[in-house]
Length: 297
Image (cartoon, rainbow, N blue to C red):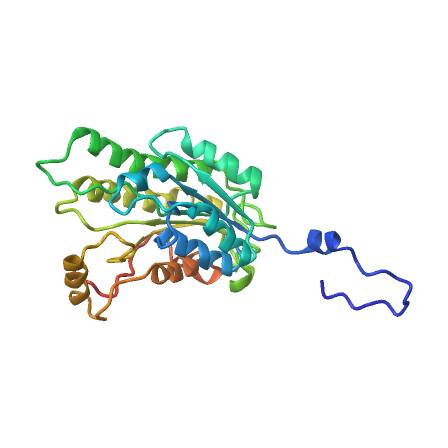
């Protein structure tokens, strides 16, 4: 607190608990797919924590174990420590998004540990390469269960529970949307934010691309169907971001296909998500944004 001391030397200073109780509430962001420290989800979590958000995040270690890069031991705990060092309260939630009941459990735990969720960031994905002729029904269904159905259920659960940002009511200006970006969003604007990460990759990666395309439609529908709550919803295509999944040949080809001559980084995506979640980003709504350095499709 910034209270001036009393003229009387006999008056004690406020207790730390009192100062903490009167501090402005930090809004809560729920970010899915934060399983690896070099991933886009982790980059977004770090940026939002630095901007004044508390962070609940989900991860699913068995998925990473199935992939070529393997699981990162202790990643969730390490990421949580980083966020806490930036001033955020955290809640790491392990969740298998193939289960239709997972979104309810995730929101229950996030709310119990941190409070109501103001921003929902969907950065999880099932992604196993296969094309039109070799995709199995099991793989197709799993991609749609994780990338599409789980995203719809998470957005629906968010819409059913959303009551505005800290200190605001539905439809009112959203207070406390991040200490680094100011408070208050202006007349008629709300505090709620939904941001989903997508991809335009389809060739040789059919179930991933098709399920992400369906995710786009669901998220953009939320911009209109949840407008009465003061919620904006946008989709971000981060373009080619190497988080350990590229081989040397693909890395070189994608670098040459980008005007800036480099690949994207998790921080590139995080800066845009941070802006969309801020009061300054309130007028961007119902959009599919390509933050890809001008990379050719």
